[in-house]
Image (cartoon, rainbow, N blue to C red):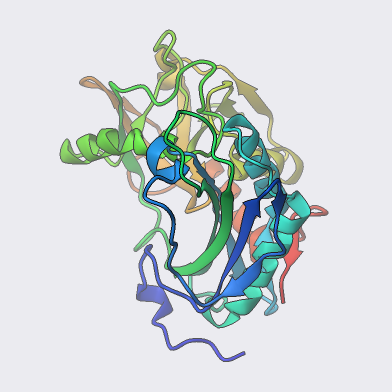
Length: 341
């Protein structure tokens, strides 16, 4: 299929309307068959559950063109599973995981012309989401829902290379113990908007959220998990029941151990020990790893030995290996790559 006439290296990281999207409705206790449609509008009641009580969940993944010309997705089964977990927590009907993968495949196929070419640095971002659609005025779950998948081509997350960022220890809490921090609910991101706008106004790129209970342990940022590297090369990620289980983080930890032969550990990470780490990064779908050069804790600067000029050596190896797997340059573990076309 001929590609759209897009300047792939300059499209930025934003929304571009594509040709088709997938829609399925839940009513009377069952999901309908679902369809692909050209209509990009959503029409719902003014009293819809999503508008009144924020009953909405979502996922994010990407389609890539590999080195040998295939179009693939990275571990969509884990996105399907995580959306199901999110649905259960918000008392929403689970969209069947096999149908989730089918919907992603159908939507990417229908928008094949928008999948950027290999080597462009761009990808096709895929956004599956679900929301309560019928009128709800009492505080209770909706009875009808809509599941949708749209796609949008996005440019490289980094312009001019992955320069280390500076983040601040936030005065805000991201998630409460026994709350919803471990699911991908829209409400978790709404609460982070004021905090990120505040951080940007103060000259920082992101926030570091601590645990709400003791404010002594590292959790995550508004949209990414932390990854640390010790001075002797061990890869460490924070362990908490109130952070989102990142698919990218899980994959990086596997790569660190099985591909690079590094020691890995998932454990509680205390704010007081950050000076002991040599490297720090934020991991997520958008950039794989965003290197962190400095963390500022209310005036106290924590500077990592890897510096502010480039990724640290271990972080760079992790990035190169995982992107190599995603783009088909390296052999992937079984089940990690879903071929679309």
